[in-house]
Image 1 (cartoon, each protein chain N blue to C red):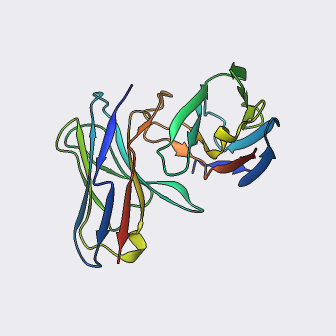
Image 2: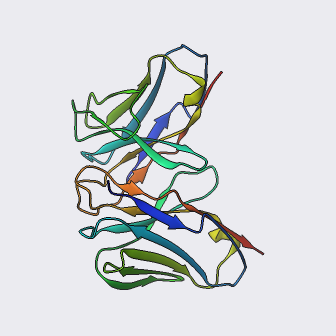
Length: 114
Length: 110
């Protein structure tokens, strides 16, 4: 089964600090995604990638950057963290491309910005 | 813009009940649909998919798809407390991303 891992699993950051969330997948999926999940909003897409070197803006990209240095790794970067970015962040791989493929999620990172 | 709407937002049922969760989608050209299940504190995980009109059954779970009415649903027979979770429906037809609904919180009381 597809394996997606995330680090760290929990993070407390200060307002204005830089935060990097990392994601690794071992199933050679081209597509990777970053979502945040908040009560009442469901899963909201922040950034996605079609493969190494590509990043695309999702539905709520403001305040976030992404980096895809390799097929396996996809990072989400908060250059200047704010309390409104307190959330649970999920990385996923697979799916998309309009082909109906299953999407595989990592375990999530709980980020608290004080 | 494509979107997926789920109903109800929350549902409480007794153990053994038949449970129905609903989704409507906005694009008549959509053709690939998934249900994901997310237990509390865990990641979403794919449950079932359906790609053509009609019905698909896997154990206690059945999906119905009616493209003409832009509707698909998940039915759980003999609901168990272990079925308590957030259920997310998804339209995976878009060429770039999966469109998720906001989810239905299901609570099955023992």
